[in-house]
Image 1 (cartoon, chains in turn orange, yellow):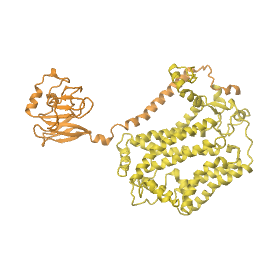
Image 2 (cartoon, rainbow over the protein chains, first blue to last red):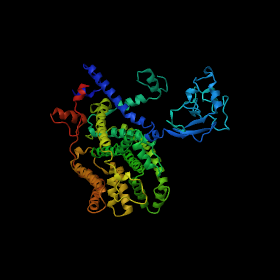
Image 3 (tube, chains in turn cyan, brown):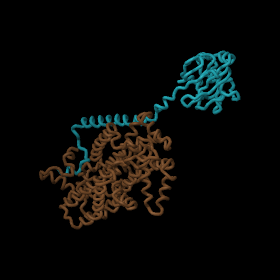
Image 4 (spheres, rainbow over the protein chains, first blue to last red):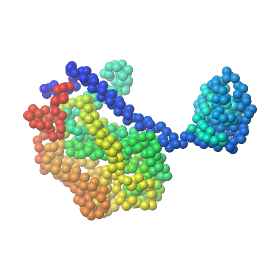
Length: 185
Length: 428
């Protein structure tokens, strides 16, 4: 008896192998679920905190923005372009046939209410802020925005026309709270 | 096997390829798989593994807290409240970290108690024990630094009092304190360096823990009988016997931990630390965290500033000399009937000091602290050196297997040390 007990590691043919397999598998599964439940709070703690989420809408007063003028506002730490487009700009943009566009979208689908164009000012290539907001900026080959990082050209409706960017500048979720006021987010 | 390659026994070809070049699998198998371990451990032998788990929990929660904490006197307190209210599961991570410190000391004190009772500090494990004392000192420093970071009233005034301990040293004292502070009071430079050091020291602990474990794997573990294993009949492989025994301990430990975190997260803390630090006003009743209370009581028991500081530091430093102060060759107190009584009295003196440390510095607590302090040191400096000569220990068992298996054969009950009976092994 004592001799047997000195070699406890020697596996013997276990008659109840399936019971043992079941115990091992269920214990492992249980432990895996436990570890997952433990890890989630740590991962989730890196998601936006409540005070960050509370800052996720921005109000913009449109009254001071005259025709042909553009302003940049910050929303969720990113620039949003708000442009009061002139009638010529709108007409030029609507005259472009959809077949010429890389990311086809009508001008009308990108505005809520004329003459306002509101887009997120982050190039869809690798995240730089395109030029074109200030009157002295380069506005690219299509009289819209031009991204200096890798040369993407956007047109008057912020649609991608040339360069490596895959998509148009996205239109954020926004609503007109009054004819002269919008809330982004 | 090619020259320069490790002779790996691993079957999986990919793993073998790695193991031949970097034999980590062989190492883990040797040190944690087949590692011969005395067969008679009781649950006190869980606490080294528990301390390792606790250290891991503290580092994990600490890294995630550091992602949200602001080490600046103007923002620190608010950033901790932001963690509690705004950060997803921030309350959980902070409460685990906060109570994890208390759990760490519960585990470590039990681990030290185990070492003291079963004579784990004796030859050949002196260096192993001393490395443990170093880990304990690093742990205390880390806990103190961490307690300052929330920048509440207790944080600030704890930092003021502890840093001022160094002003007790003659001539250089004030210069040391100014250096610690980086200014003329505990202020922003102090907070930023405390944060840097609080982040650094756990990794120093990891380093010394590695040495502690490496030394352990040379001498092998002590055991409740204090008799060295004499052959394979006295040992069992670490895996699965002690991996599973440690797992049972970890489950119980996590239950206690969770009870503390979810039902009494602030029970061991002090409410004054939820008041933002105010350098113009000291709280009326200032006490350290519970795990520092015995040393705080020793400090206050001495009417002299320098004397109190020296005695307080000595109360831990004396542990370094313990392997040579205890002159008895018998390790386990189970076989030392007289020493056992003195040891339990020492445990009581430690508890009394902890109680007195939380009380105001007035009679009768000062007198009680003095008596307990005197006994605390007398145990190490007088009792243990003399007892080795005068005490007559009970006869030691011939071997572990004889003690563990023999008793059963004689029809006696299980060992008081909770030795593993032979039964589970027959089944394996």
